[in-house]
Length: 283
Picture 1 (cartoon, rainbow, N blue to C red):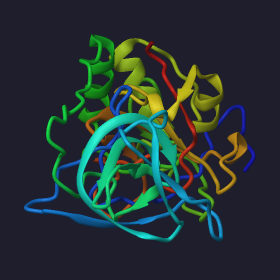
Picture 2: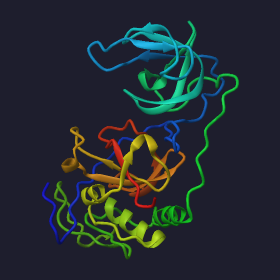
Picture 3: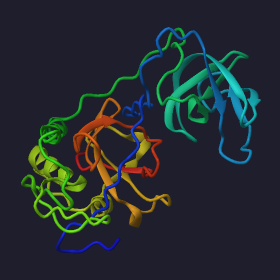
Picture 4: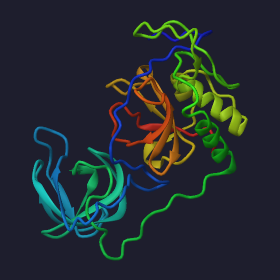
């Protein structure tokens, strides 16, 4: 899609919502609620490939720990408990969750398909749960500004600016004319939130917001960061959506979906098309 210099043009696509997700804390994993009353759980090794390489089992929850075995790609493992260790990026995103398996040792949950981005087994004895640091006042105000618009306005293609909701434009890739719809699109909501909450003027398209930076790896995601979605190639030119990460595994976004278009929802870094870097307008 060609971006025009005078009008906002973005592609808004519905993003799959995970039923049970959590998000990386600052230097922390995608974590979620412990599965109720689960004594053990099972998972499948997935190291990517056909088949992928075997997954190394470690004596401790760190990649530098002694190797105590291997599990082949596609193998089923029994998870007796889970803990937090070294942050690892793998098939299922970035996480510090490690799974202690019945046969002994630990494997990174980034390579285990369990059907959830959160915990699926009890915490191992002695585990300390990571916590997010307190966001700055500017970040809190930005998040509050974005949240204040949720449920109040519809999605409007090309709508929204640093000053608030506006009429949209014509026409979306599917031919929708939003010239009579007052609201926000994804980058319009972001533009408003940072102007209202932190006094920052951001660019007006999702692609330019990503290009403007500053960027950090998504493994360092924290409240106040901007998350971006791209085409399957995950290139800058394929970016079509942006959302504000608000902490605790959730984002606030404007999207043309069933239900409220401006909403807070659960988020996983493993979602299709998520860019490997986030933008941190507030340092």
